[in-house]
Length: 567
Image (cartoon, rainbow, N blue to C red):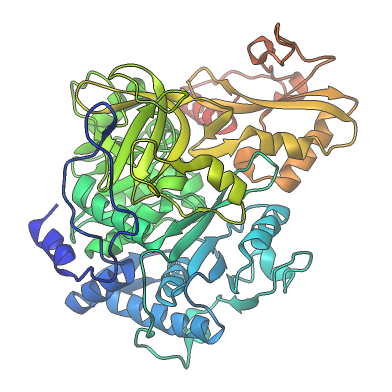
């Protein structure tokens, strides 16, 4: 990280962004912090962006499929849209639903929401309408910003939901912002106010909204600016949907340091060959992706370049993948963190000759604990559950006070009022103060980087007529990737389960395997024995007549489809 860029960040006044939750916990066996003193609090994104704009207004802030904007243009358009949001009642803790295609307009809508004092709620237009409506019901947005192609735009004012919202159609940026002031709105920002509400999979069948504060998000951005670091000269390729919390790094970290974010459109994100071309042609110096995406790039023949820094997270990174990625760039980082602790909570740089891939050490103003079932510290090297404390903790789950109290608990080793988040991950503290993550305690899984509660899928499939019992599990494929498989008992057909899943769930939550059983296998305690479930096998009607690849080109294509389809 260039000293000048960090100096610019640290010089910005943080008097309005003091930490709402000071760091606690000692280093050693109980918890580990990264040892860097980042000061009293990180400056808010809006404050930093104004300073960057004043310093380099003509520098490219965003290059997107719809438009390329300098910092001055980005500031002007987001200010105008912020004033429009203010005129519609958006203020501190107001939610603004955003359902737009990937591009500069989506980023401007998110920035405008922040400038108006509100919290953005991503609503991926590729997700089923039923799921989007559930999110809108819980978020109760003050305003909806949509594109005419969004499924939410077709049913204003969100018929069938309890939310009443003003709808802004943002097909044309200039038209949508015309007539509003170009100067920043006069709004007071406080670190405890909401920055965004991101909905993740919920075990009850409804997505649950995680409320992240402005102070937590600002702390995350400043920590990432230090390590893994980003400079004004960097170009970051953004590939993650905004409904995935890691998109917060991809879209806003470049703006936080005065760099350029290049937003890949949806067809490019879904096609590893196109993605490879963007990486090779656009002078990209940083990209963040899940292990599955990096594997697809490698299978597409991508070889990298020596100026690229690679961030990998969302799922466990295997040694085999790390070995393939290390020659492809200048740096490789393994990232770890649940949505409830603001994107990433720890990171490790994977260097050539590494001995073990870990989740590394905590980011700024973050502590990680390893506790037993009674929440007592476990000795270094022994396995326990990972708990995370510090400034990155979410405010809780939206309208889910019982679940919030269950997951965000009083720190048994800190002062009254200090909270820690129960991750549900097993782990241990190693001699070098790095943490090793050893998998989930419960049945929550990650598929292609998306965290999924298997119970949500089961709840949807259970509603299919003829289903008596249903269970969804994650099966390991030959290449190590997990794939979802649904097991059911009853008269319902496989097609009926697939149709209902596709109608109610986003694509990444639709099982790829289906197994009909007369009864579920049980263990000695009378519970379903997941280990005894049969592995799904593709039937002839699923895959058609099998033909072997005839040449190297077909072999590579077959390998790509195998990974994408999980077959």
